[in-house]
Length: 221
Picture (tube, rainbow, N blue to C red):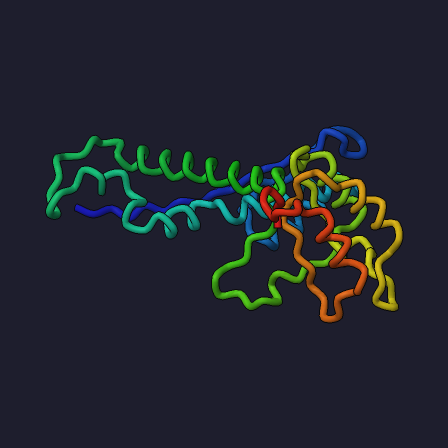
């Protein structure tokens, strides 16, 4: 006998600093429309709003539907005990074990998506995306606040964005405030630096190359 199992996954969020006292929104599924509704109902301030957006985005990519479809044939625990389409009898609570496994996998996926953001791994782009998918706007003030407080800072690597911080002047030259930074980086390891512009300023490349070891060994480029 085959029984169809249907699952509905929903979440509830509360704001302890809600005007007039702590308040919670109703249980809803974690799709994009409800995410916007949550933000509105919770009356979050700007910084809370940016943090919540990261959580809601992670939730939408770690729900039961995503978990089961990405696991494919391995989504069922019972499949690990099946050989040549035959298996031993199952316990009466097998369906509960399956749902618990999906839920645990979803929590792990949620933690992974959030930790990837916190450690500064950046944005993921699907394989079918075009190159324009990598073009992202500079962070807003509240996004920058969150990054500075959550991203793990490393001392053995340093990075900068030549375009994002206004280092290039309209005339194609190098902003002079970038020069002391580059000169101060001499002797230190650099992370990956990518210059993404059509006309390379004449001063920038020699200045960057001067930071690399003379023998070309040990520099990060």
